[in-house]
Every structure is written in structure tokens, then in C-alpha cells.
Length: 139
Image (cartoon, rainbow, N blue to C red; front, top):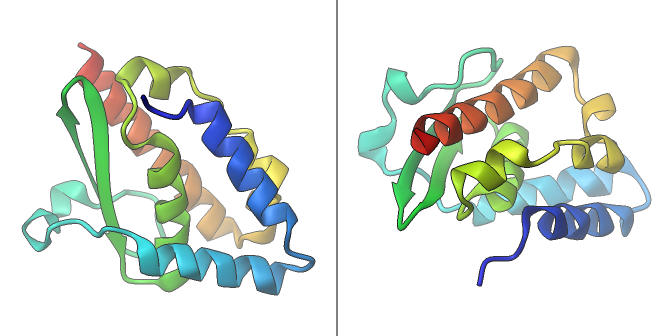
């Protein structure tokens, strides 16, 4: 059985709350980046680039047994950590679950306000792209 998105989001909020400062939280993101199962090199195509990101971010989604599975990569470590966080939240869920999920956990973590405006825009673009995949797969 799949862990509900809201539960995964709460786990992330709790994880980030364990760290006292943002340097430690960034280190946690970097650790997430290193643990990301990256996109197959054959999927590193312009069609899979997330538009609106300062760094290059590739995101691929496919539907497997009714659930959307994401793989991703980035050429920047913090950005790769951000996309790893999002893959952890949204991958392995039905399109309807993804489309119905809130992204307010990002604000509860405090992530958006600790990113540069360009990275914050990129974060929103990654979420939008994941929701677009979910919408396409819900049809």
C-alpha cells in the first residue's frame, strides 16, 4: 500500500524541523540529491527540461499500474535536492492524488522563503510540471 501524499509531506516537515539552521537543511537537501534515482540518460532531452528553472532540470513521468512514477536530474546540487524532495512526495501516486495534493508543506518547511527568487520560480515550475504529467495521465 502506498503512503498517502499528506503523510509523506508531514514526514518531510518533521525531518526539516530537526535542523536548527538553514545550512543544515541545505545539507539535508544535498543528501536527498545524492540519493535520487536519476533519470535515464536517454530521457535527458529538451522535451523533459523544466521550463522556468535557473538550473537545468530534467523531469520524466510515466504511468505504471495506474500510478505516476517520476525520475529526474539536475546539473545543480541544491536544485537536484529540491526535485528529489518533490519526487519523494509525488512519485508512485495516482494522477488524482497528485492533482488533489496541496504543496503547502513547502511553506511549512520554510523552503520557498529561503530560496532565491529564481530558484523559487523553478520550484513552482517543477511542481507545475508534475501536475501537468498527472493531468495528462488522468485523461
